[in-house]
Length: 417
Ligand SMILES: *[C@@H]1O[C@H](CO)[C@@H](O)[C@H](O)[C@H]1NC(C)=O
Ligand SMILES: *[C@@H]1O[C@H](CO)[C@@H](O)[C@H](O)[C@H]1NC(C)=O
Ligand SMILES: *[C@@H]1O[C@H](CO)[C@@H](O)[C@H](O)[C@H]1NC(C)=O
Ligand SMILES: *[C@@H]1O[C@H](CO)[C@@H](O)[C@H](O)[C@H]1NC(C)=O
Ligand SMILES: *[C@@H]1O[C@H](CO)[C@@H](O)[C@H](O)[C@H]1NC(C)=O
Ligand SMILES: *[C@@H]1O[C@H](CO)[C@@H](O)[C@H](O)[C@H]1NC(C)=O
Ligand SMILES: *[C@@H]1O[C@H](CO)[C@@H](O)[C@H](O)[C@H]1NC(C)=O
Ligand SMILES: *[C@@H]1O[C@H](CO)[C@@H](O)[C@H](O)[C@H]1NC(C)=O
Ligand SMILES: *[C@@H]1O[C@H](CO)[C@@H](O)[C@H](O)[C@H]1NC(C)=O
Ligand SMILES: *[C@@H]1O[C@H](CO)[C@@H](O)[C@H](O)[C@H]1NC(C)=O
Ligand SMILES: *[C@@H]1O[C@H](CO)[C@@H](O)[C@H](O)[C@H]1NC(C)=O
Ligand SMILES: *[C@@H]1O[C@H](CO)[C@@H](O)[C@H](O)[C@H]1NC(C)=O
Image 1: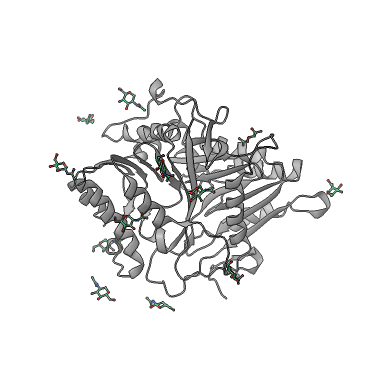
Image 2: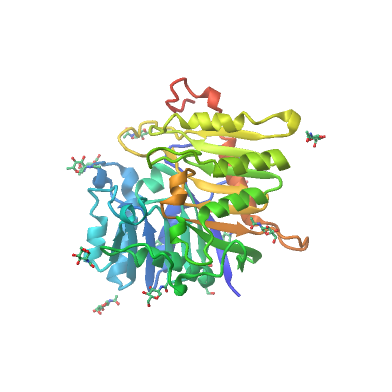
């Protein structure tokens, strides 16, 4: 009884050129403006940090204009008495940004959640809930670079209160711990529980196609009863594939990244190797390289790829996506493919986490699992998977995706025509 409409959205950094007529999704900026325009009563935003103005990082560049527009739109919503609830990570990366101070002065409710104290992680989720019925989830931070300097993929769902109410429960897990001395409850009260999960995903219509969907969450300490942990969802989606698993994530490490001493963590790596070996599922990993890439990542990727063998039908391909920096050298932490999604022959998955241990054990994130596969041949085609697959293949086949052996010796990730 939930008739929703669904849209994939993306940002392509300025001055990147794909071939004419290649697949493109609705621009993130347009989708966010559209969501803000339709907001009537309240908006909940789960965010890592806010930095929507160029001056926050001493950059004077026209590519920050869209971010600044979005901030102004939030201010105008507050002037119209829309309730704005913002959950964000403490301490913040964006030390000089005044966005949240300004919004708070205009009436926004802001809570800074100290995930360092709570779980030794950060709040890395990126989602919105508009009027308890529309939603955004995806890779984009509340950062002006998300529209013009960083490559992002996300999903927007409209008119879908049945799913929005469930995502709101995850918002509440953050919100209710946004005070001094908060601790993670050893058992969350029953009103945080959900019945919508990998065992019982919600049946909804997405653009008229019968779909099952659910939201996962991480870390497990933020999964009240019934909530499927994000890592479990990812492994389930991989295990369920019969033909292919295409993954586009910024970083891939079968290890910890932020906690010490470093620990090996083969959970996802094993799942990929297992389906490639047991079921000849074709694996493709599209991973990013940019100025801040730790080159030790390439060893893990080479190890995965080394399993490929045409004689045994094991196919694990890896490509490295490089966003050309061109003359945008004045912009720190830009020019990267920040995507966090996966598509299989069964399911589309849109997440907010990179693939290394900490994101699933200490850091807060969410995942959206969309399943339009049916045994009923009369059912409509799995439109969303097709679209996400086309998006993946556009990037995979583009000139920006290179083989590891074609990276320069020092793995400097400078893209050359
Ligand atoms: C669903 O419908 C909306 C509005 O017509 C459209 O923008 C969107 O692309 C459609 N989604 C899919 C998955 O086809
Ligand atoms: C792109 O699509 C348009 C409209 O369908 C068509 O006229 C044009 O020839 C196409 N261009 C290329 C390079 O394929
Ligand atoms: C949002 O509203 C503004 C001002 O009313 C308008 O200029 C803009 O075109 C709208 N944008 C979208 C995406 O609906
Ligand atoms: C923040 O502002 C201080 C003082 O102007 C400056 O030194 C510092 O580089 C700024 N930090 C960032 C991330 O821009
Ligand atoms: C930003 O650059 C524009 C033109 O490049 C210039 O007119 C403006 O004064 C600059 N603003 C600041 C704050 O430096
Ligand atoms: C917002 O609320 C204030 C105080 O209740 C009221 O004076 C103002 O007219 C309201 N504005 C709008 C646009 O509803
Ligand atoms: C949501 O539903 C309303 C009422 O049925 C409709 O007018 C509106 O166009 C829908 N919005 C989207 C984005 O599909
Ligand atoms: C937090 O704990 C400190 C020290 O135990 C105490 O002084 C303070 O009142 C507490 N704050 C709140 C909001 O409970
Ligand atoms: C559950 O109930 C408590 C106490 O009334 C409230 O503070 C909390 O926000 C509720 N949580 C949800 C997800 O409804
Ligand atoms: C997707 O739905 C199909 C058909 O109901 C089911 O067999 C499959 O297990 C589901 N896959 C996932 C990953 O949820
Ligand atoms: C590999 O696939 C081919 C074609 O599907 C098949 O003939 C062959 O037996 C397979 N080999 C193995 C080792 O599974
Ligand atoms: C970067 O190059 C583009 C086109 O090549 C030019 O329009 C733009 O002004 C340049 N920007 C800077 C900051 O040099």
